[in-house]
Amino acid sequence: MDIEINKLENKMLEIKGEIPTEIFESYREKALARLGAEMEIDGFRKGKAPAHMIEQKIGEDNLLREMAEMALAKAYPEILEEKKIDAIGQPLVSLTKLAKGNPLGFSVKTAVMPEINLPDYKKIAKDEKKVEKVEVSDKEADEALLQVRKMRAHQKMHDKGVEHDDHNHENIKEEDLPEITNETAKEFGPFENVADLKKAVKENLEADKTRQAQEKIRIAILEKILEKTEADIPDLLIEIETENMLSRLTHDLKNMGSDKETYLKNVGKSEAVLRSEWREEAARRAKLQLVIEKIAKIENIEADKEMLELEVKKVSEAYPDTNEMRARQYLEVTLRNEKVFQFLESLAK
Image (cartoon, rainbow, N blue to C red):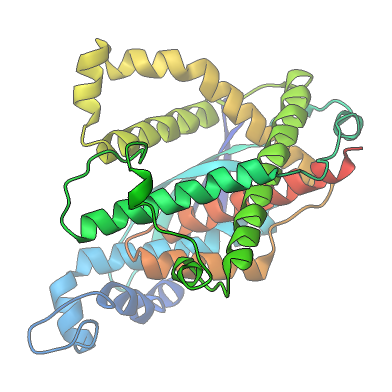
């Protein structure tokens, strides 16, 4: 590929180039298979229609865009590695040429790692205390088991058509709670007796407490590192974090049966005002990601490639419309971040 790299302002790069026709067209069959996997056409089982019928229903434009996504998902990481570009954040991708029997033209704008002055992060991590073995009392285990019994009683009431809207289960009477015997213990899972059930409840509580303690240590270490780190944050990363925050808000509102427009009206703010108010927090999150990426680079910490491919495959199969390049980058960052967290935790006393 002929690649042109242009430096932009504020630690930004533009990567322009073309993927040769023969390489671009080699993705046609794969793109058809992915788009047709969930497609239903009269007279055929889902995903089993002939390729020419799937192609006709999809349309050439949609097929070409899917081909472009798949081609760039492979080409972009290779370009970064070959040109030794230390890219960070989600790239902004534009297609400059998209036509059958032609090269794929593209332009990618990305932020690159700015100058970051890290403190002695190893010493900061070592000054934190390791997670000590957590203890779960019999009282805590009994309370958890009581909640399990209330949930089962609640479910049985619904199965019988009994109206019961209290999802806190606090108003369920003692006589309605299922008795825990060696026989009924088997209804709660793969348990042979009451002792097995109580042991599992206690182990689950211990695991939850351990995770919470580990999370506190992670936050404490990272906040101290962040406080002592000096870095110029590219505007693109702040904008990306702001978009992520807005997407999460939209998703949460949808789950609650609302939407962004209603929320903005209720709080008496415009989206522009909301973005402005979020900028400081978005910059903090962007800086945190830069810190994690810098530590990963210094310590040669990378995402496990086999695990990454497995996760990308799972996401692609579960959500066929997912942008593969973005999904791969998101999953790679997530897996690598986890390894950095584990590394810092391992240094604690």
